[in-house]
Image 1: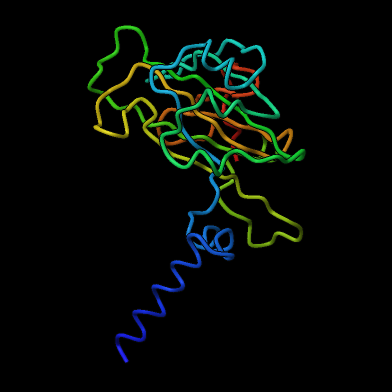
Image 2: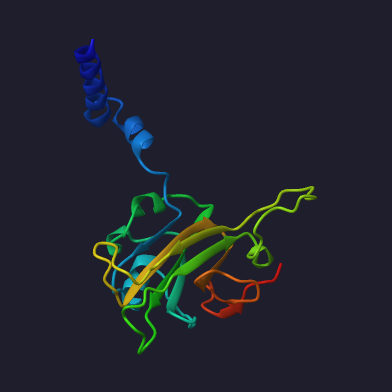
Length: 204
C-alpha cells in the first residue's frame, strides 16, 4: 500500500514537471506573483534607464537613504534586471498596470554598517496613503494602501551592505507610490516615486 502511494506521487510529479500538466503544476506550486521586488545590486542611473526604457528623473533624500532617480514605465527590459527575489512574477503584459521604479543609494558619508529600512506605500490616491483600516461606519468601498518593507541596501545573499539598488513596484495605472525611511508616519517625510519629489504623508 505504501509503495503504491509513493509510486502514485512520483507519477504526479513526473506529469507535472515534464508531462501535459506541466503549466498547471507550475502555477500551483509557485509563489504568488510579485507586485514588488528589488534588483540590480550597485546599479546606477544608466541601469535604471535601461530597465525602464525611458528617461529617468532625479529624486530626493530621506533621513537614511537617497532616492537618486525614479522612472515610470509600461514595460521593463528583463535582460537588464538581476532580481533579488521573484522578479518573474513582476513582469506581465497588462495594459492596466505600469511599473514605478526607484534607484536608492546610500547617503554620502553614511555608515555602511547601517541597514536602512524603507517602506513603499501604494494607494489609489495621495489622501489614502496613511489609511490604516476602514472606518466602522464606512458605507462604500474602502481601499487600504498596500505596503512593502525591505532593507534595500543589503545584499540578500550574504547580508553585506551595498551602495545602490533598484526598487520596482507594479501598480494599476496612475496610483500613488510613496517611499519612506522606516515606518511611515502621518505628516512624515516621503518621496513620491512618480515625480522624485519630497512630500509629506497626508494626515488621517
